[in-house]
Length: 376
Ligand SMILES: Nc1nc2c(ncn2[C@@H]2O[C@H](COP(=O)(O)OP(=O)(O)OP(=O)(O)O)[C@@H](O)[C@H]2O)c(=O)[nH]1
Ligand SMILES: [Mg+2]
Image (cartoon, rainbow, N blue to C red; front, top):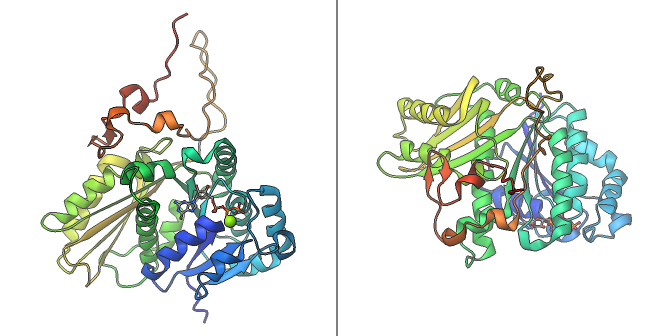
């Protein structure tokens, strides 16, 4: 009988390979890891991890230098190898940084391949820092819109948000570790759903059915705390997780997957309390799956990870009634943060203050996306 693990985690491009390599030591052995890049350096830095160098003849072992076309040609040149590596996994999770060539050019290619092979595909993708310039922003925006359509769930991590979290003076590595924690928490949860021995187990098939549709707006949140009342505090932290409240993020979803891990003292009652708090904030009316686990080494720490999906946006709006106001302009799939929109003015250097899931230091009209109409 095949002992093939259920999840394939792919790190794509420089950022994707770096993120996955940092996460690898903390992930359950059941997750199969694969690094994919045109550049040999990120692959050589992690010889213990399986990898595919794409486009040897095209990029000659280097990055694509931001050239999406070169990166796509590289993937096409190694289509057979990629197909072989991606075959046979119920769940494929793709981690990449958008804005350069390889991540932006190959993410949709891989997602498409995995979907064709019958996998459920989730993507975690970062968006460039504002200071990286207009070209990278544009490449990332276009790539994320294409990737969204070819994945069952996609979580966008704004790199600017990472900076906001850690403060402008913090080393870049500290900012990136926030992304690692969020993505890692969600992955741990997904992996645990496939492992035996959970306090509250979840059927992997049910988990896949949560992400049954392509292009479903996706919610991702993560919270952790320790000591007395850790479960309640971790649930509150997940509800206020900046990842779930950034520009363009989904506030309410139909289906939820909640993952709770704690030490031996974690009770089922506490796990269910976490679910109640998360449902109150994020919805989950169609279905809510709870996976709870005990980690003997967790001590008093409790971690809560939340993934959610809502139905894909309807293509056609209902016909307006006679005499009704004209239909609003079609909204873009995502709102992208501009340098200005990410600025929190006087509060830029302070920790965020969340009340009812909203950062109250951000002006109301920005929080509620009210369009300001200039006086005639
Ligand atoms: N969160 C996070 N973002 C990163 C990291 N490294 C790079 N980035 C971001 O990822 C984007 C893409 O950069 P790379 O991954 O180096 O580019 P690539 O996909 O390898 O593309 P080419 O090298 O041009 O072929 C950058 O614009 C940064 O915004 C990282 O370690 N963590
Ligand atoms: Mg690169």
